[in-house]
Image: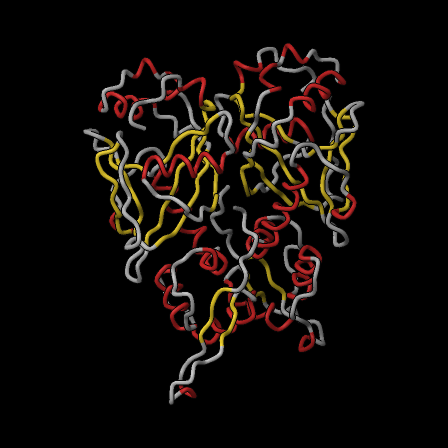
Length: 242
Length: 242
């Protein structure tokens, strides 16, 4: 948003926000997309509000595009945060002031928000996130080197990571993180990197092959074909939440 | 609520609701707690609103107690529903009118709601749900015999069931559905009944024993002790979301 909307209260549902934990991965470390608000020292997850005439899912896609330039993400909703502790009008006041807005013109923003949180996963070498006018920077931070985040955003990251790990088998089938065809070993490496721990090869292979999410392809003839591992792709997409 | 609150708009967050899918099970069929609104033919999940000064989780516990008489449930949040299709002021108008309230006095209720949905599981022989003043009845319906429900409540039930099944291993450890000590066979039967399909005995046993959620107890001497199966209990409670 280049400027705050002219009539925030008329355009958006009050008290309802969303936040996004965007995981980035490129075969090395798991990172998270964090924005820094102008002149405040506040780091936060990209988030925003829900228009009165748009669905929650549409609001998240639209808002994320506006705030980060990212589009066509596979977003998974994982939890809605509604504690009283997250009510923190001072932080919002300082963010508005630091960007030249008068807080008293935006009383709705200083009120309590319940936030619906989503996560996604992408290859951070494939995208160039762009900060919006409210943010100084939009950067990938390694999971272990996150700055303290606004509100309960650190807790959101923890829960998003748990949800991603718990849902990894099916989630990876819906995102474009591996080549079109891959070996079980390549799939296992990706699981291990995101889980942050080694996986038993035999039971991983058995579970994957029994899961029905993989489709096996013919080995290509290569002279030493008897040694080449089978190649797989993800089978027809499951009907996910989104 | 015996009467609608005197100042709904002042007491509750606008546009935000919750709904609860309460699964009941007693070793036979999986059932769901459904209420019927007075003289409307509307069946719905028990739900309500979030007070401006209470957390989302507290609102759900309080509201569920008010609407059903049920207390101390292990509630698990599973999804927030925010489509535009769920906006249906006519249904809310008819519910208010049928209970003797003038809809024009409750404009907030006729507006759009985003609803945070929770599920729980209990033994329906252990509880006696009591309907509140707005509802005619509060009944257990077998999963396969649900009436058409208000708004998107049928979709909520489907997603709640998927979430319960997906989370069954850990969820059963947090609810009081089995005797204090039980055999792997008893645990397997409960899983099969809730999953709605048979489970492979060997892999179920291996998975449960490796999961760390079970604690094994000494066999009690009974003459034929070598034939008696081991008894288990759930190990120390995991820190769940709530």
